[in-house]
Image 1 (cartoon, rainbow, N blue to C red):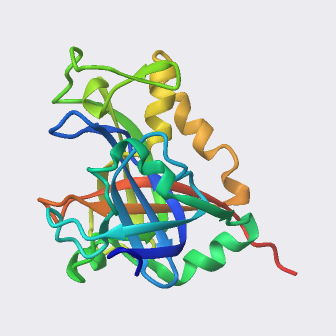
Image 2: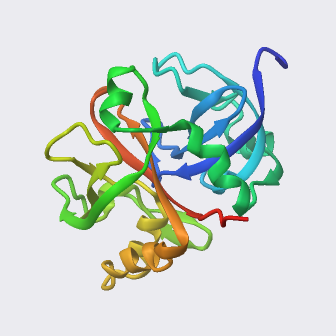
Length: 244
């Protein structure tokens, strides 16, 4: 503990969702990762400019969010009062190498999303045995949504995109006859859509073009108000471990 905060010093970042806007107009990103000491961790809110890139290993002071009862949910200590300098609280201490990624995550892969729901868990990792990615017209699309300047260009939250990326899939030992149909929140997918507005479908080829050399895992998370409704936070593409 440090100044009333729990310090996680081994958090491996596994994904960041597309930005959204808080009620006080701050633009935030939800990040998720895994710590050997704490387990799966959700960090929200975080700034868009934070160094929470996938596979970074970070040290970060956290505290519970009284507005989020999910066991995996935390917020960075001082997230509101120190918002302008919040990213300075995160220290990047390393990066998880490719050969170390599967050994870290394989022990925590769940057989089915249904198992996570029944265990009361709001974050988990599953290995899809089959999948089909697609776009759906967004019901809550708002073309007039306020834009935010980031890195010299404008971005919006997911409601500012007319298309919603989704995936249907079955887990390794799927318990649902129809499998799963879930929204994809991965920030990288939305960034491709923003930068390539007439080439959205190409994002799937970009994601899976090296699939023969990779294991595909989905980092999934449930909604705070709908614990049985899971979404894909991140599509993890991990180099396969070669036999010695």
